[in-house]
Picture (tube, rainbow, N blue to C red):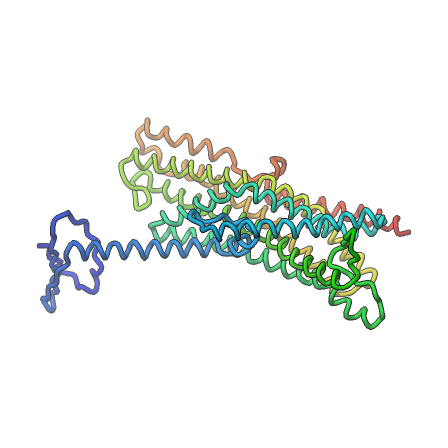
Length: 456
């Protein structure tokens, strides 16, 4: 019989006890009322199961909170992986989503290019349509790359979900939630800027046509140029169908654009959170603690294994984003230049303020998106370097000599800076962001000079 003489039931309930296979009776005694009550082994086990189930549900909700923006953007276009036991209907819908998204993007890009070739546009006319065309082509390439890396994306998502489910300490959960909030914040802002500038761009021909109707202008504009070889896009209902298809295609393009930003921020900020947790694990290496328990050998093994897990996760992220970031940087370098050119020229020519607003917001959207990539890349570099510094700062001299040698591997690996790259050419850091802006502004000055001579 176990007596907890100095405890009130309201304080000690629930109690987690390690019980044997035999029937165990536990007696709780109140000093005031001297009332006793009995808990059998089955009730204790049920309480433990309920506690574990509640914790699992909480971690599942945390994972859903962290991944929701990416899921919402990528699921409708077939990029988000299917669950392990997907039904036949889910598989069919998944494949149908991929087919529809692919066909819509091709329907926009191919007639657009045909229109440029057939109409024999001037240099100035090509420049005026180059920005959205480059955007559409690079987004379509990134969409294909996402589909190509679906297996790696699934592994990374599973890794994130497993890390959430293995989080048992409330402080670790807070660290992961803070980083998840940052990734979610970047995803929401990217989506807001992209749809905030993109939907007015897609709606602009319709809005301007309302004013043009008063002037008896019969040419009906589309969001982007389109040349259907066997059909006249100016005739109803071909015009209306084409406009609707192009409008929905923009939804797909913006979902891919924002979804990549959200997914990248989610993965990289999760890796940053794991780096923060590893630094706390390192602090408990010498004397042990809640995060790092067991013998000294077991604690050292925990540090090395967690370090390797983070390294593999970052390598998987870089494998997914390598080509995608290269296409992103090409798009940003070209379109920051072109959008700046559009804003300056339209302002000087007294064009519609709606048009200037759309181009300005698109400029902010693309600039912000590339900044997010570079910012989180810089964050990852800084967190990774802190791991090596933490290895130096712990009381490693208190370890036996043969045990202290095991810290050499994390120290050496942390000295080799882990960086996300764009096509193994550019490192995704803040320095790269500033270089892109400088290059785009230089091209903008050249473009203004060349176009002014072309117009003259």
